[in-house]
Amino acid sequence: MNSITTILSGVLELADMALAFAILGGLVTVFVLYVVDVSQTSQAIRRNYPVIGRLRYFFEHLGVFFRQYFFAMDREELPFNRAQRAWVARAAKKLDSTLAFGSTKPLNRPGDIFFLNGAFPPTDEEIAQHTPKQITFGEGVVDHPYTAQSLFNISAMSFGALSGPAISALSRGAQQASIWLNTGEGGLSPFHQEGDCDLVFQIGTAKYGVRNSAGGLDTEKIRELAKLPNLKMFEIKLSQGAKPGKGGILPGGKVTELIASTRGIPVHQDSISPNRHSEVTDAASLLNLVDCVREASEKPVGIKFVLGETTWLDELIAEIQHRGVDSAPDFVSVDSADGGTGAAPQGLMDNMGLPVAYSLPIVHQKLTVSGLRERVKVIATGKMINPAGVAAALCLGADVVCSARGFMFALGCIQALQCNQNTCPTGITTHNPKLQKGLNPEVKSTRVANYAKSMQEEVALIAHSCGVLDPADLSSDHAFVINDQGKPERLAMML
Image 1 (spheres, rainbow, N blue to C red):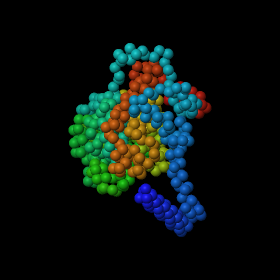
Image 2 (tube, helix red, strand yellow):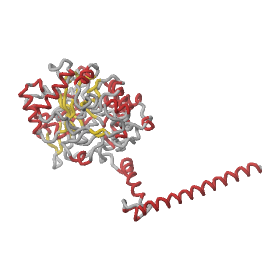
Image 3 (cartoon, rainbow, N blue to C red):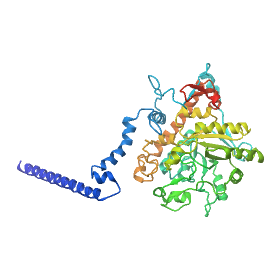
């Protein structure tokens, strides 16, 4: 008994000493912080309120997460609200997507699109007998045209902007769902090829993956890439939604040895793309670049852009009509000025370019009036992560819709808004091995596939409710938009 008492007494003494040291350490820390704060001159709050003033920055940081999880309503958070993210999560996990007690979506918010249900929707028997329409790119123009198996696919996300495990999961999931994966401007990495899915190779302004020693286009590298049977198309990126008018930004902390070798750039240095292709100065030189890539690859080639001023588009159409319809890009990808996943100056992300709801009808109409609409397929990208957004894009003139952030949510993204800091807590946009460990490509690939399949099913459900058998048959006649007075107006009358 005495020995136990002695041991307990010793433990208590050690605990008292540890507590005393902890208190002393805390006091020393507070004193050091006090001295630092009153000595520095860069922040007035810390100088006037030493130590306590630091709590302002701590609470400011926590405020982002408190708003997301506790204070923001289901339909008010930006860039994606809780209702939007919740649908993706349920779809990715194959959970029940039905809700009860009515919609929480406002019915009078200007710009929102709603759909017009048909009086005689197709029956289950008619739907079962229907063969979905397919979209073919480059038909009659290139030696290897591409027929897409899905109207919903994965938009451009580079290896570098995204981690290796994330790209791997996207590749495997794309193969499971029979959809394509756009490589993004960072070149073709081994992770893109793990799933043996259909690929669209994006050529950015820095020509990553197909550049020569001087940074120009190497057509021989395009020929070699085109030999890959699952690489189906090439996309020349002129601009993107996150930063119209500025090239891609990859912080040096993300430029690992593998990323550097994939892109053909130095390790651990910021990777900043030019704001445009140096050889493209007008419509004629843009078509020359399209023709160069198409001749080298013998596969469909398109262009991606955020629409701003439209004069150049009129000039491009005029140049195509002068050269002949075969000179046209096989597709155009219309990106939305709604921001994107990558790092970008706030002035551009918030204020530059047209949202896809405005730009997509303009592109569709110009191609239609000029007689090029059948020749040039239209892909819409930008913030369409739910079935209503995809269906609305089809009504506005898109043939195909692609999403980047929707598939990031399917991977487990929690919208932590740290994509540019290499600190992504879900392992999706970081190259920190400790953070990447949490992302299991095998598990997440299934969720990617589930999300894509659920999207196709629910877009078809909207189409059937509108009275058409095929989502490809959706048009401006099947929707209305809320005008500035908060009243419904036929979408067809707006275009």
